[in-house]
Image (cartoon, rainbow, N blue to C red; front, side):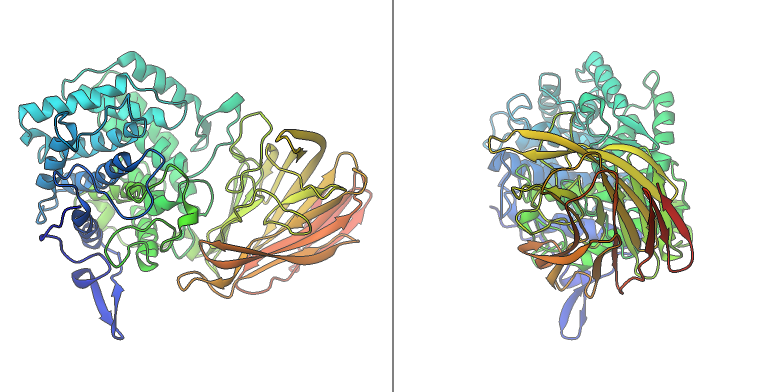
Length: 627
């Protein structure tokens, strides 16, 4: 570790904060100047953890499975993105970030230096970081690349050229290859056009439609949906075009990517609560406000269906959400977690340096302060004005937002992060519902008499809980979504028994979802359990408090209850899950529950059942039918 006397106060302390009631509180991030200051102070806070040549930031805390050297490069490369964005936007470099990172680059690409970065074909993780470095160098071309010595330029090209020899899996990683190759092409370095084209074809095959990309299409299933759809598949696609200006066919490709981005910008905006909180679903959630990277990209490429004042408002709201809730520690470093530190959020590929992938959420800084993005009047997000309900049939989601509490809920009838092979349920993907204020339990399924959140599960006579590992969506339209999945029980040897089919229908009305389940064939001695949103017993100081999670059985024979789990979540400690249970389910009968999440108890509907037909009568007199 190297101490740096030029380091200034962190984003939460000193110059970037204000005194309030005898304690320091973070400034609000509302303007471009605020955002640039946040980026500047965040970069300065990293410097005390730099190696002598600046090629790595060896940060305190967990390292990734790739080891210390790769984790240190993550901190350098991902924070370098912020340097590039600041440079492209014309910000004055008062803190001398360009020279600092140029020195780190020179040490990293020098094979004789003690801090040199391993070649891309020897260290897999470095392929990701090479793409971040390529984007940063492209954006800071005149401030950094053009001022490097010929030797450092040559060594940089040689290190990046390892992308032609490295292996990139069939996933979002292929964008890392193409972006790296695009930079090499732009500076006259070696590149492999056939590899680029092959990857472009594959990445196009991942486009599910309506703005959504699946991160891989195992067995032709477009079911691997999470925030990677935006912060790589969309954002990197257009940045590849930005780095390929003048190449044959690039204008046409960019036009196509813009048309794909437009509906995603609208969808992603609606996946953030009124307070800015992103939907808590999927993996790599420690990247936090990277979720707004695609929103900024829409502004950069004139690809936003929403007013620029609304794009800015929504993106700033999310960045500010995390700044206010402890994403940066007192030392100015991004913590590994959600609000503050929460290590259980970590996958094995994440380190402290990984969290600086959030720099993608600063991409709007490439637009100068006189751009309409920064000058147009502020426009509130739709959820701040009125209730929202949007169907996404391509991926099987109903997205519901309620203006009175600002909560966004997603009802899921299509996303499972699977191939066509049976496997364990994925808690971050396969649940029936997610929200901006709750986190799913980490357990895949329930056990004994204890239910995990947001499931429709069959419990057999031996007490085994079924997995919802493969979801086949049937329809999503209006306020209704329907899907079917096999009842799969895990055997002691890890294999899966396949039994009956469960057909489920969700009907959404305000903050309430009516969830109806029907078995294709009965299972002797079994029970059906429908569970709701998980809430901590004790919320963290930065989480929403006084929330109400409810499940009420609406069919005859229901037993309602609650399961308590000794587990911490990103929102608090000790988790409580409401549920309703039906014993000895019969073939062809609907088992119905009302599931609600809000700040106040909900007024539940009642149902009228008649020969396989369920009439849902809502409190305001609206009637829906499940048949």
